[in-house]
Length: 317
Image (cartoon, rainbow, N blue to C red; front, side, top):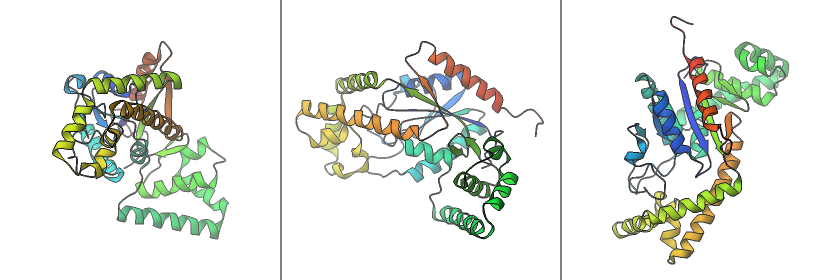
């Protein structure tokens, strides 16, 4: 993967649970001829519908959705599998002339994909070899040599950060040698995609009210019945990875419905806090305050500008 700014564009919508990511992503896919890739650790499972807020066919409005309903309940699914499958999907969507739109709240999955984490044995060994070589040369030749190397190999990064610290230069050089060209700098991260990452932010009190309302709606829409169906058909399912999802785990373990509802709301609020903390570390996310009157217009304008700037000129270099 050559992560320069002429790479085909990728859109992503991130944020805590219940912030409205799915609806926005579908609107963006409709407006900009996109296909959606779910970045959700549990929407991959067939049968987990209500509790994962999986968009139904009507809600999808004809937009292709990927990495939804692609695993059975008893199967495992890892960040490495997500990264591999999502990378292949992005390439396939680009070949169809469409825009990939990533959406979901599983921060590790999104970060691993965008920043090019190395998971398989061969890739990890290759990354480790470059890291070892760079550290050894740093010890032998010193920081001035490393800076000169970074000036030659990472001109965009060094132009933006002329006094970049050793850690930033080492990360950039490692990705340079892994991918064969300069990674895209996105503030505090080096991404291997030309990506615009949109973050949706609600005030904490308002978000908690949305979470509580959504949990109530899930029960009204049959969450308890969904879990009971799983229990009847899969007596050992309590140990499965799929049933660790919030909502399913509490209903599986707690007999009293009202106690389970309270536990689910509490667990979902705690999840939202963890998600906010995780996404704050991803400095390339562009955040939008959804309490402002023009937040949607701002997003659509920014996406349009990003896509225009990302188009390779005919016959360009």
